[in-house]
Image (cartoon, one colour):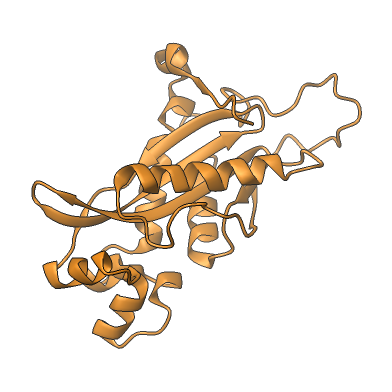
Length: 214
């Protein structure tokens, strides 16, 4: 894997900011917009894969999505991930983080049928925004109908498969694929896709998105 600096595309803080704490160059500090252990573990796994020679310091906080508990469209799901990442960035008073990472699961109706998926948002300390999306997991029609009536996917899966708090374990993805894929593995996939510009910054240099809402 190509050796990359965590600041090669998204520099953290200016060296002239004397009021900011000096952080070791061999660490990346990440704040995840959730305390769900699956999401925190996914962020740490993805960044460890991308930067194997750098220590990954990763922790989660409660960050509101400001969307429905069960997002029912792609746009709502994407917005939820962005809202969580922005919350993390705006509440990092001491400006100690390099990246703010958020993941949001949602469902929608597609031409091929209903499916669940995840969106991820990654904000750098300088408010550059990256977004990624997982693959679709087809949903049984009877489950999607219950979602349309206001139930949450995790609760339905717990009932159908007699599990407990599956959303903090393998998720619907794990149960419906017999654990060949899991919620964590799908989040990792989406995060790696979102970070493609970090691996090839010259190819993406004209496509940088700066989050001016912060």
